[in-house]
Image (cartoon, rainbow, N blue to C red):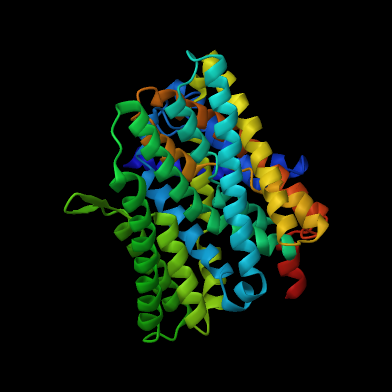
Length: 424
């Protein structure tokens, strides 16, 4: 236990110290946290096997799963704050159109490119693997995007649209992956399962939305018994933890496997709560401040999970580079086409696709499922390679796009310590 506590402390301090370096380079803090995780991971400092100094094995990193899942739950819960009725009336239809359009077009582009690679070199990648990777390509990481938005206090038309699209993207990506993986399994084993391809993915989305709605309503009801700001924040945190725990449950109804999407459940909880609670904005601000250390740990641990050994596999790098190029093109032109259809302003049309490039947790979860295919290890390694690239480069590109449209103000040399002294 003491070793784990020391590891967590070193991870947090290491990420914060490295963020001082990235600030000098005008890079987002999330990049520093990911790099700190890489350095403290089992492939760099972890190789020294010094207790407490870094994570010595991947198993040790995976043992921190409860922290990453909890952080994702809080991230999704706060994203639900973006789905206020006033905002949905203003841009809800456009966000849904763009969220679905860019995800579907990205999947189609990656499918075409990777199936073409199979036709040219059948020994490199199979059709089931290509189809599965196409669906995984649709997923965007909400965590990295949210961290950039928070760090630079980004606000404006692009930021508001981006947060809605990222949230919608999760549900669309889940559906696309479930259908594509079902087709890939049928091609690999010669059996088509209507339950796996159609019923189970739709049921998972519906169950997630129902559970999230119920938890959001229940949270609002329980909070009415408390008037202290600190106690109400504590109740909110407890409910997010409870929601994360329940969303991990799986069960069967006859032959149908039932489960929940953690991100969708927590997102819906936040959405319902924010629309029925009059003081939700104040509570959301308190929760965001309280979860800052948790989010730092999330990204450091995510960086430590990145397997650097995949860089020694030429086939993985080849397919990974093709996957990254195809996915990037799909996200950019998919978002651009969808923005043109919904008549968005030119700055949004030109920059939205770039902000959708980060990819991490959701894609890695899909990759674990994809690993059950005959050549699923290739799919998993390609996604790991892509996540390594996207997580290190994506936040910077998101920052530049938000800066280009004016949603982020140019950085100044302000200090919270100095600000606090000035206000006394």
